[in-house]
Image 1 (cartoon, rainbow, N blue to C red):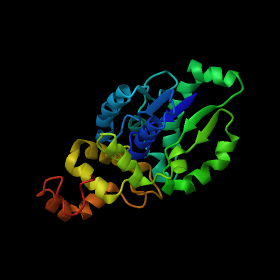
Image 2 (cartoon, rainbow, N blue to C red; image 1 turned 90 degrees about the vertical axis):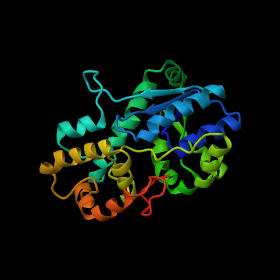
Image 3 (cartoon, one colour; image 1 turned 90 degrees about the horizontal axis):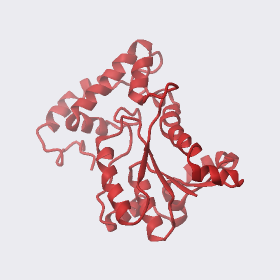
Image 4 (cartoon, rainbow, N blue to C red; image 1 turned 60 degrees about the horizontal axis):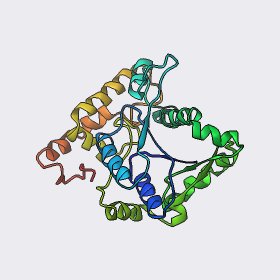
Length: 261
């Protein structure tokens, strides 16, 4: 039983392409939707689904986080209700564990083929899309992987020696457009140019991110905002002149690097 956690980005897309080209079967492809993914990620899912269908691979199963009452709860809703920012702003990865890993684990826990594997005393194989430039991430995860009683983690891109450029080349050769960056539109890890891109191309989402930040502001102490040591609001104010310049250019020709190609 082989499970793929599909994030909708370059690495996980290249992973699926590489597995197909090597004739390695895949049983289940899961995408955990936080409810706040980048617009490009949502647009890419049906493109990838069609490619998978055309190549005889399972289509993507979308999973979501539900609260104890069984109601859908997005990460954005949770932050707004609690008056907090995503956990990454505080230096933790709880939001990813809760809204990404958690729903996938829950699905597998109730998925009969996975349960059959565990009933035999075996492990489900989970392929992770770290590329060859991310061996440090694999090494860091090794101690946790060895303790996992339900899954055997493997890292095919590293085994194949595929770095980022190799992944992009595989996607291009497969006839697919390159995916955009996979993250929430209010992710504290977003770079300045990515915030500018959001501001210019998806102003409604930018405003929602600012609303989330402002909602958490009364409860913040050491953290200043979505940028951890700085707020997105302050960044925008300081960057107004550059934004005014960028707005004069088409999004594919922004001199300050706002366009995230």
